[in-house]
Image (cartoon, rainbow over all chains, first blue to last red; front, top):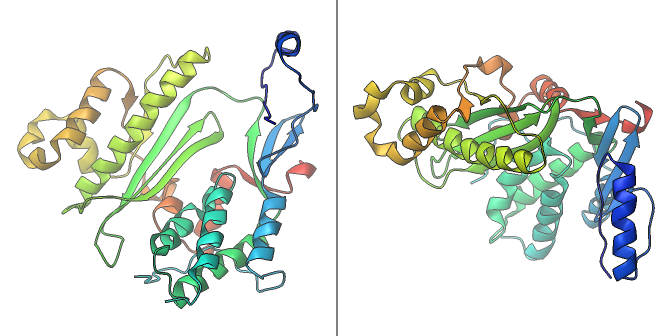
Length: 82
Length: 230
């Protein structure tokens, strides 16, 4: 099963495209885009926000870090890694 | 070396996927992904620190404003000889469409540069390729750019070399990149305005920053906490 995202500002045109897809293929309209491959989409009146909150929680589980200290930068300054 | 490197690899590849919406961890993730082959305990510690950082950002996301101009703007930078082990430089550039942050790069250069100007040049050349690609894409989508794309850089000698053919003798060794950038300037694809290091938006892609500077970069990249409450 494959998913397709249709993005555009012209609603009638999008509906046209959906109809033409429907006439050729068996398709189901899942409505507005909220979640796709771990990517969460928030539509608001003033714009769109993309985030991966759910995916981040999964990484915490993987890293065994449900609880831990919070730091405010991702990397120490002048850290020698090599 | 770690007894079981697979968990390290899994964590780093997950973090790489997370950079799609969290560009502020790009440089840190680029750093830890150099050790996938043979990770040691200190490397895992750095990965855990990134996770601890994510704890503070778990509500964060990239914001794309609806009322936005469609003018492409770029920022390019290089941190010369950043890698302590190989003395290679790090390329960092980013692109905005209006106020929306749409593309970025944090990558160790694959050749050693003997001067900062040279590493800067490599970064500009890489950013230039991205601009050419974006202009083509925007044209195809019906939003052609009518003015050259400003690519901001903070290295005056790199800008001078690009705009003044007299410097030829000094830049023989980086000819291909140089000619590529000059051609782009000649064809009005881009301009190279100077920006002070302080106002540059790229150092988050080339080095580790202080808390204050890091927070400033997050604001510039339109990374917003709790996007639902805007």
